[in-house]
Length: 144
Ligand code: DQA
Picture 1: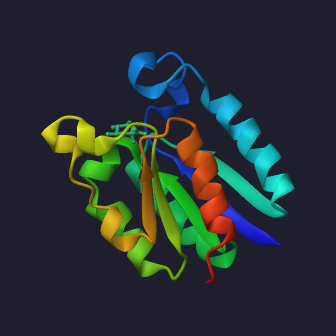
Picture 2: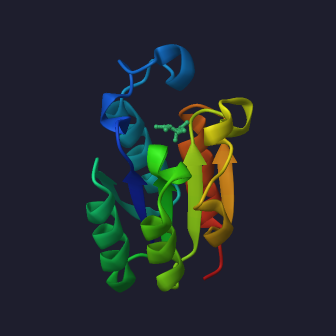
């Protein structure tokens, strides 16, 4: 069974209340339960983590080395700033998919640069909550 770690970055715990015109009306808890449902259908095991702290995300990525076959990460604001998260991903040999609810290339200039994308297999951006579900399907089909 494929094992995938899903990481939600800062402020994503506020989904549903936070700028719903940009990020949609659905809460993180709802997205997580749909991810669990879809993982069961794809015969995958998932672990879901949310953190508002860069160092905690780095540690979570490092700890995935002993467990995960794949990582799905929405680094949120750290997408545009974090060399530490990028280095953590490139330090472990686990295929990683970057996810965004919004299309970061349609937004402010500072969001149009991802430090994370170059160390990922691919990026899914702009499909709202569906970005996560598409990423899970993509992860199911990645050969390690
Ligand atoms: C986001 C896009 C980021 O620019 C922003 O900082 C977020 C959410 C998204 O999912 O669209 O917090 O990652």
